[in-house]
Length: 99
Image 1: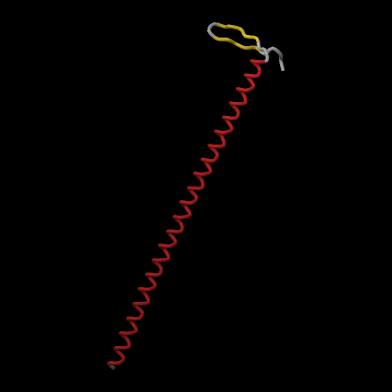
Image 2: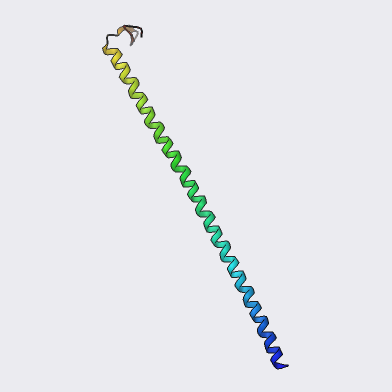
């Protein structure tokens, strides 16, 4: 009888240890899953920010190129012999040829 009681106590203790181990394992799995989700979320945000910055730089560069091109065209027109007409305090330039 004494041996049966000891074996029952030992068996219940083993089951309790297995239950605790299961809870610890499930807790670690939840923790690791949360870390992985946080990592991917942060990575996605960083990618979106860098793409927006790249698009901003591209738009800025294109606008600078467009402004330089317009400035060059206006300078060429002025040096090609545009007609200047004074209107008040401003000077208006008219193209010598209509192209």
